[in-house]
Amino acid sequence: MTAHHNSPDLWADSFPHPAADGSKYDRGHAVVLGGPMAATGAARLAARAALRIGAGLVSIVCDPSALMVYATALQAVMTKTVRDEAAFTELVNDARVTAVLMGPAAGVNDRTRNLVLAALNAGKACVLDADAITVFRDTPEALFAAIRSPVLLTPHAGEFARLFGEASDREADALRAAQASGAVVLLKGRDTVIAAPDGRVVLNRDAPPWLATAGSGDVLAGFASGLIAQGMAVFEAACAAGWIHAECARAFGPGLIAEDLEAEVPSLLRTLLR
Image (cartoon, rainbow, N blue to C red; front, side):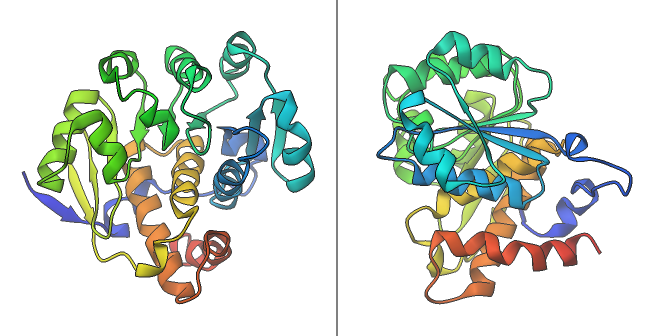
């Protein structure tokens, strides 16, 4: 196994460039599963990150009881309500939905589990983070069996252990997890490991310490979802999102909170798209 150092050289050729004569509909539609009324911040951070990284449309899908919070806190991000699994399934089956992010503060409950399986059964490109990983801790094989579309798992060490066991050798264990699950695995940490089922492994080394702050991982998941929504392959999108995430924190420096990360994106995009 050879692990490569993450840099734009690995993925710049596939980074999405908006067409001069294109429209927002050409840049993909990312759907983010929103959490309950008392836990809306994570989904809002992720949705804004997906929009900032270039997705043409981003919608937060939430229970009607939480709609007022999302609708009043977001401007360019759209809101849609779903009462049950059937309504969610109908929404994500829309061909215009090009990526689905689930997990940030979604809740570790049957609803989250069922909606994750619905999106996977619809064949959508998915990013599964946080609660969408933890909810399968007792039945990881049910998740792995449902992964047939492009999927990115973005666990921190604790979430990784719930599905795959403790990571003692992060590179080897991330690759083992990718091959067992059929998903690309982004194992977060100071040295983030991105592994694909086909054996590719990339390291994003020496993340700035300022990233150890609440909501940082939600922004990372949003970056990856926004890139996938635009048509970037999952492994390359994960590598690009991890690099951009770390560079945004490096550019901002001390005092960073999660909301600050997306503000650094435009200057990085100007460099990448030059």
